[in-house]
Each structure stands twice: as C-alpha cells, then as structure tokens.
Length: 322
Image 1 (cartoon, rainbow, N blue to C red):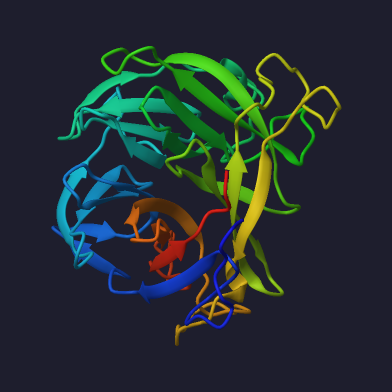
Image 2: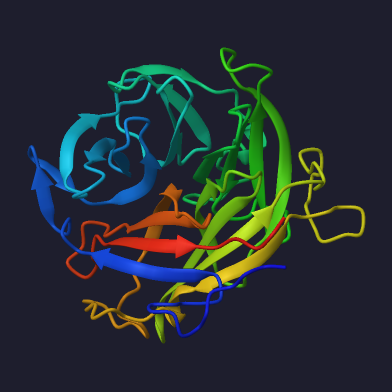
C-alpha cells in the first residue's frame, strides 16, 4: 500500500510532493562575465555539485550547499560553434551526454571537449530532413540504472503522428565501456496544450516527466508525472503514431500540478495564478530522504528576459509503489 503525504504537512502540494524552498539568488547575475540564466537542464555531478546547463552553450557548476556558481565552461559543437543545448546527464566515467535542438546527443569530456555525436534517428530531425517541428525536438535526457540505457524525450509530436503523442528515443549498450547504439522508441501521451520540458530517471526504471505550458489566463502550467516504460511497445517502426489497441504507451501518474503548491511568499514579474511558478525547464534528483523519498531540484529558464525569473526549487517526492 502506498504511503502518501498528509495534506496538512507543511508545504504539501499533493499526496506525493512537498515543496521545501525556492530561491531567486541566481536571477540576473553573472559569474566570470557569463550570464547565469537561460538554464535548460540540471544534473547531479559525480563530485556532488550541481551542473546547470544554459541553452547558450554554457555549463555552470553550482555548489551543492550554497547553489552559487563555482565554475563555468563553454561547450562548442563539432564545428566549434554554439548549439541550443537542452538536457544533460553524466555518464559513469564523468563524461557528459548533452541533447540539443536538432535531435542530436553529443558526448563531452568533463572539461568541455567535444568527443562524438551518438548515432541518430533521422526521422526525429527537423523537417524536411525528418518529421520534427522546429524547437520541438530533444528536450529531456535520462540515464537508467546500470548505465546501459539512455532515454531522450521529444518536446513535441512528429508531423503525421497524433498531436497528443510524443516519442522517447532510446540508446543501449551491452557494457559500460562501450558506446551507445540506437535502439527503440516509447510512445507517451501528453496533456492537451502541454509539452515535455525535461525527464529524469527515478532509479527504479521509471521516469519523472515535466510537462509545461503557458496560458495567458493563468500563466505557467507545470505538472510532474511519473511514467513507466516497462513493457511498452517499440514504436520506432510505426510511421504514424496513433492511439491503437496494438500499441502500448507509457502509463503515467500525476504527482503534482505545481499550481497547487503554496506560494511561499514568491513574487513574479508575470501574471500567474500562483506566483511561485515559472518556465521550468530542468530538474535532477539530488538524493534521498531517510524514508526513501526523492530530493528533487528544479530550475526555470528566464530567456534572459526582464519579465521572467531564474528560480530554483527544492522538492521532496514520494513515488507510488512499483
């Protein structure tokens, strides 16, 4: 039987999620002449600190305790230019795997040196090369336990697919010292009007999924789901993905609609139904509580705009039982 969070618990957002704190300390700041914003992804560094990726080809290291920047490096693509980076994970050897718009995943050394591009599925590239829409390609990246399966999530649907259905691309390898090879795809049904902004491995084979959107009447919409890829259909050979009896999509469970979180005294330059909310683009699991709950860190992308904020959130998440 699942043990859920008491609604009366301080800062409870739902039966599964508590928001512990938020911080705007990074908003509109600079570190070594680099703007600390446009943050699109977070990852727990093997050294215990936090990697924060900007979609302007910049990678910051944040101190785990203070969350202040302590290091910054530039990440250039194979041609020495900038790329629109959207997601990252650390591999077992400390190298970085980084997903970008264009549906590429690149490997970098810890010091930011480009190594290689992982094999790609050309169908996920932006049309006319593939069937993806502009700015709706890879947005999330997760490395499953054991390090043998890598998963990337598409932000939006492919042309020809049911517009509610998104694809998750996987890569696999037989051992940790081998490079990933292209593997199957999962299907996922998004909420109407929302897109995936990030994913994260939970450690038990399932995935945390952030769906986000914006509605002028309420502001940002942020929902955190738990998705289960076990036993789903491989849809890589399905030309036009639709809801059909012979295709098993990932099941998902809503953990929290963050509009239901207490605002904690937050203010916001944009009209929001809950001023705590913003354009959340990145998240990472930073640890566990003694009772087995996940400690989750989230970040917003301020798009270097005076009307948006770079905001960090700390949450505690209890997962439904397997």
